[in-house]
Amino acid sequence: MTLALRRNFCKPTTNSLDSDFFHDFFSDLGLKTSHEEQSINPKIEFYEDDKRFIFLVEVPGMKKEDIALTTENGLLKIKGEKKRKMTDNSDGIFRSEISYGKFERVFKLPLNISTKELEAKLEDGILKLTLQKKEELKSREIEIK
Image (cartoon, rainbow, N blue to C red):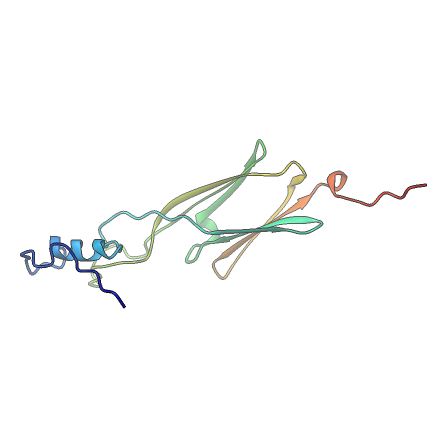
């Protein structure tokens, strides 16, 4: 294992947990301290079968009220916000690696999608969107006479 030495390791510090030393230490590791604003970008999994397209959107810790879905002009928009549950620092938390914030993901839908039959289900931190393919654009075998 290789250890990288941190720059400013011997920098003078105060006793405050919110000091430059504390901030520099965690930011050098790629972590954010709790007072920094964080953004979220839910991961998406997408697949299709003969009848439908399916999106799986990773939204842990979110409720259905925190998410909005819209379709317009051939686009599917997924918007949401993961809100911090704690309102003050009374629990003594000085570092958070949990991401909070707003997000928006926009996807161009294929022409053979029926947006009228879009189904959405949120379960165990996964938003499942099922979009039915239009009947007239589904592939079919044609018999030659």
